Amino acid sequence: MCSRWPSLLTFTFLNLILLTTLISHTIVSSTNDGFVIIPSRNKTSPGPSNNSHTLSIPWDLGLLWTTLPSFVISLFGAYWAWIAGAIAERQPYVELRKEGGAEARSSIMLDYRVVASIWRWWGAFRRSHYMVGVTTLMSVLLTYAIAPLAARLFAPEVVRTIKTSPIVYNEVFNENNINATLDWRPVLDTVAATLIYHGNEIPWTDGERAFRPFYPKSNLVRGADISANTTAYSAYLNCVLVKDYTITSDGGVVEVSGNDRGCNFQQTFGVNSSQSTYFKTTSEIDCSSKAHYSRLVFTAATYSSSASNNLDDISVISCATAYRQVAGTLKVTPSSSAPLIGSFTEAREADTVQPKLWRVFEQAILGPVSFNPQAKWSTSDMGSLILYYAQRLQPSKPLASDTLMYAASKVFTATYLNAVAIHGFDSLLDPVIGTGIALIPTTRLFVVPWVAYTIIAFLMVILCSVVSIYIYLQRSPSIMTEEPEGLLSMAGILCNSELFTIAWNILHDSTFDGSVLELGRKRPEVMDRNWGARKDAESDNWVVRSVQGADMGTTECLLRR
Image 1: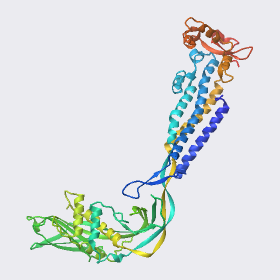
Image 2: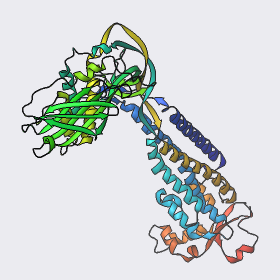
Image 3: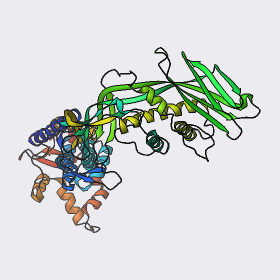
Image 4: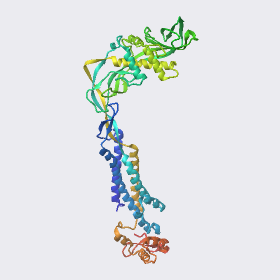
């Protein structure tokens, strides 16, 4: 019988195995980035980038980790349903053994087997058969909630596994390459393409820095990242709006002069009615070391015949230059075209010493001037880039001082990093070999925590319920000596019972239509009495009979064992 202790002990053992397996897998999954590697196939997906990829998992493996947990929980639920069914089937016989018996609807007229399990628990609670109700309800939840939920217990996820990989450095930075012989127009055109028109960054730049290139010595799995030591090169402007300046004019020529943080500057440019916007760019390279050596000065204004010096909305911006060279670790995703730049972590303090040819650089970038008859201003090519970028940032007020300072800083940084990336590196005859870290995409199977916690909690409740069932079986005995199986067993229980006489009368009733149960519900000798069982004095077997008040004090006590 499934409600006896060997069956309960076996069920408890299986429950503990499931709990141990779930808890251990959950711990391993959370601490080791999953608990098992899943074979996967890399597939290149269509698109403009060769780096695009997806990980395809064979369908049969996916079927395994979704159906197996659900199947195991379903088998476990079937075992519990067997126990719950036995508890429900046993309940009428428990009622018959109670002192004073029980009503017919809770004893001889009750059979939980004919009630669907999904509704059985409700009727059990209404009859105060709480153990039947609890076990049946848990069986329903285990079958229709926990088992389907178990299909989501495991989920694949791509993680990065670390592996050392040889790295090749075939280029080295040469600061002498940034010299007066360079044609700066291609560099400025690159800045315009990337910064103003949102084109792709050139290789080994991230919009702020240029990096020394490196490459994995051997091919990596598609989608893998590589981290290696490299050096980043960058330049910045620290701009301020100069409010204390002097402006004079003489015959259509305007002179602007002032002092910015200890560095004197002076600009001279012509003003006439044919030009509406002015943006003068100059480089001052004779500042002291305390004043940070140099300034890039930008004066923006609009023409006004009624204003002093014929200039209105004047903004004088002075920018100190700064250069950084810092070693660190760069993570990139290799590609057949250009690597995708990831994160960069600085390894030590940056070197902020001015480059060897910084004077040449700062003067040369302001040198190119192109004539554009459609432009509303006349300035250097770099000045035009700053104005175009300012227009994109704030179309309604491109000459606002804050906008111009931000635009000048971005254009200067982009100009330097593109100059370094395009001209700053020389090829090595003997490449340098180093060591990097490859981050290989690996598909691993994870335990979904909230699903695992739900199942574990439910299994713990069931484990406690098994203890309650064992106690209940000891405290609430029934009249059964064996599990009723077949008509012969049922006949043994009803031997010498009043129910035989009642059944004979129903069968011979003129209104009998084939339903003994329905006619039995209409008979007062069935429904108006309590029913119990007594031990037969001769056979020592239980006999089912109706219980009346006088019977309670006789020697035929229903609870005599």
